[in-house]
View 1 (cartoon, rainbow, N blue to C red):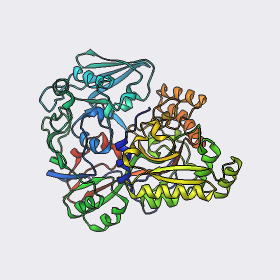
View 2: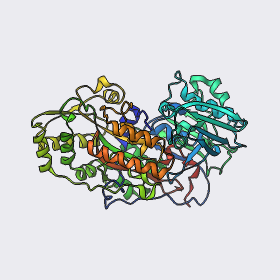
View 3: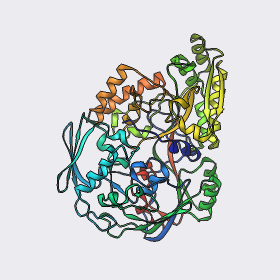
View 4: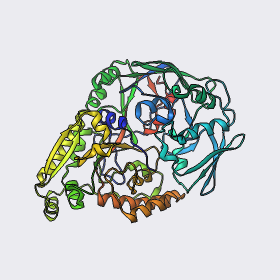
Length: 535
C-alpha cells in the first residue's frame, strides 16, 4: 500500500534511530551484543504519574496528519482506531467489534457499543463515517489519502454499522484500519473545531484510555486518565511527554530519573544507560529499515543496474551498521523489514547472505563502462549516522572506480527530496529510514509500482506492476505473501533502493515503572495505559 513518507519523519528519524536495528528472515544474523525483548514485566501496581521524553514536539495531534513518531506516540493513547495493532504486531478488533468482508469490494464494520468519547457522548456509526471520510476530503489534506485510493464510499448502513465500498478490491485496507487511517473522533468535535481540531487550542475528543490534559507549547503535553474508558483502566493517573531535541540532554533526563522512559534511544547513549543502573535498554520488534534511494533510474550513472549492483556489492554493511547503529544492528540485502513477514509462517522467504565482493563489483563497473563516472550522494547534518552512511557509501564507490561526491544539503532541502522531483535533480542517492504501519511486506513493495508517489527513481516493470496488482487483491495472507516474496526478489535484483540495515525498536524504561511493550506498536497501540509501578 503506497503511502507518502513525510519529510519530518525522514529527517527527524535520522537523529534518533541510531540504536535501532533488527534481524531475521531476509537479513543477516543479529549482532552478538544485542538482546531482544518481547516486552517488559507486568506492573505490580498503579502509579500516580510518569514522564516520557521525546526528541520533538508534535506539530499536530490531528490523526489525518499523524504520520511521524512524536505525534503518534502521544495520539495512540488518546484516540483509537477501528482495528487495533497489538504489541505482537498482529491485528484485532478495536472500535469495530467485528468486520466482515462480504465480497471483494464490500467491507462491513460492526461498531462497538457503549464506547464513550472524552466529552461523555457515546460513539455511533455517524462518528465513524465522519472520521474516515475526512481522508477523502481534499481540503483536509490527509497524509493517508493513498490508503483510501480504492475506496468508492464510506456509509452508515445501520445504527452501529459502517460499510466501505471499493472501486477495486484492496486486501490491505483493513490492516491499515489499525493505524491512523482508522482513527475515530467525535463527529461533533470535528465539525465544531474545524482546523483547530488536534491543536493545543482545539484539543481532541476521542475514545482512548487517556484524554488530552494540558499542552504547553514548546515544553510538554500532559494526558489524564479517562475514567469512562470502555477497556481496561490505565495503570497511571497521568503521563507527561517532554520534548528534548538534544540527545545528550535526553540521556541525562533518563539517567537522573527526570524522565521514566523514551523510545528510539540514540546509539551513543546505550552504553551509558546500560551502566547507569537507572533502568533497562530494550530492543524489540520493528518495521523500520535503512536504505539508499536511487533517485533517477532513467539517467545518470546509476541508471545502469550493473552499477547499482556493483555499489551494493562494495558497501561494507557490517561495518556501516555497527558504526551507525551500534549493537542493535542487522545488515540487510532487502529493503523490507524482517518483522513484516512475522504473520505468514512458511511463506517468509529465506534470508540472502550478506556478502561483500569488491572484485566482482569492479568487474561490473568495467562491464558498464562506468569507471570514473560520477555519483552524487545527498546527506544532511541531522545526526552522526548520516555521516557514517554517506562516508561509507562514498568509500565503497571510490574503491570500485566511481567518482563519488557527498553533497551536504540543508535539512529543508533534504526534506524536499521526498516530495519534489525538482529537488532530486542532480542527486543520485539519498538515505531513508522507512517504517511500515501494517505487518505486511506488500505495504513496502507496492511502492515500486509504476507511477506510485514514493517510487522516487521511476522504477517501471510491467511484470512487476502486474504482480503488485495481483497481490493487492489477494485476501489470503499466505498467498499474498508468496506473491510479495516474488516482488522482493525482483527489488533485491533490480535495486531501485539499495538496502543497508534492518532496525530494531530501541527503548529505555526506568526502574520505577514497567509494563510497556517493546515493539513499534506504540505508534498505534495505547501503550501508556499498560505502564504501572515496577515494585
